[in-house]
Each structure stands twice: as structure tokens, then as C-alpha cells.
Length: 264
Image (cartoon, rainbow, N blue to C red; front, side):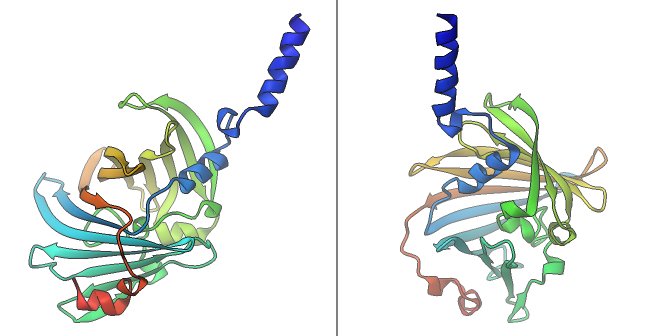
């Protein structure tokens, strides 16, 4: 009888869905990448910039995104205050890891669209703690993944901590990160936290403060990125996202350099 029970257990394990089997770091990363992030989406954003003394500055934005096959087109428009009003940012986020993402920034004071070079993508996006490269998705194939630990987040959700190491110097140069740790929720494969180790010795701590399902799609609604030098926080940025709508009627023609010059 014991032998029969053992045989049945082995057979059940062999036929169990892959989601119930032990996952590798790479498989977890692939599932994170495969999470549905919606299509033809619009949203309102509030960017809060916080200096080391706790002083806050606010920027209001509108965000648009659309899938083009496996690639993603997205644009950001700064609405206020006046010093950044009509500034716009356009990204073509390519799935192919051999193809560099395209990014352009429209600066109304110069009445000029500036293309963001790969060598500049690790730089700060509009004075925030997010880099230009942070505004795109990472290509899974560009990294090695290792499960470092299984934990329970303060939210009560079980999670994996993944160590993420770039395979090539080119990726390090683009993102400015030598290594990252991703805290991935087991229930929905969303990244709830991350720690990025910068080449200059600083660290950036990303925390998703709020996420919920909208139209069945897990959506981040509040994200903090904090930069630290040692134990000292040098700057922080909070993104608050609201009025998220999916399946809007967005045309590919809306995602062009001509459109960001034109504005909303």
C-alpha cells in the first residue's frame, strides 16, 4: 500500500501544472514579463520630488500607452507647473533585446525634440529618481536570475527575492545598475519592491505602495523610488497614478515625435 501511495504521488507530481512545481529564477522572471499590463491605456500621474530635507515639488502628467505587436509605444505629457508645462516624452519599448529602445524628449523652451542616446539612459528622468532606462521594461534575456530567498512581505503576501545580474557591460552602462534584487509576489508575479545597486556606489530602493486590479489587470497606483548614499537618503520620488483606463481608442499616429511637439 505504501508503495502504491508513493507511485501515485510521483505520478501526480509529474502531471501537476508547472505553476505548482518549483520555479527557477529565470522562469519567475519570464512570468513577471508575461503579466498582462493592458493595452491602449491612459492615466493621470502626479510626480512628487522630495529632496534630502523633505521639501516637495509636484509635477502633473498624462500618460498614454499602446501595444504594437510585442512592442510598446508610450508617451508622457507634463501639464503643470509652468516650468515643465508642454514637455513631452516618447518611448518605443522593443521586445527584441538586440534592438535599443528609442526615446525622445520634447523641450518647449528650445522648441526641439531631443533623442535620448543609449549612453544617457542611466541619467535622471526630469530630475526624478527614475532614470530614462527605468521608463522601459527590462529585456529578460539580458540578465541572469537566481532565487536568493523566500519571504513574506509586510503586506502579508508571500514573495521570492530574485538576484538579477546583467549579462553584458552594455546593459550595466545603459541602466547604471550592477545588480538588482526584485521582490516578486507569488500570487500575481508583480514586482512589489526592488533594490538597485548603482555603479557609483549608491542604491535605489523601489517600493510599490499601492496596486490593485483594474479591468482584471494588476495596476501599480503608487510607486516610490528612493536614492541612498550609505544610510542617508539623498532624494526620493513618488509617482501617484489615477484615472487609469484600458482599451481606449488610441492610434499609432498619436505616438510620434510630431505629436509630442504638437502636445495635447
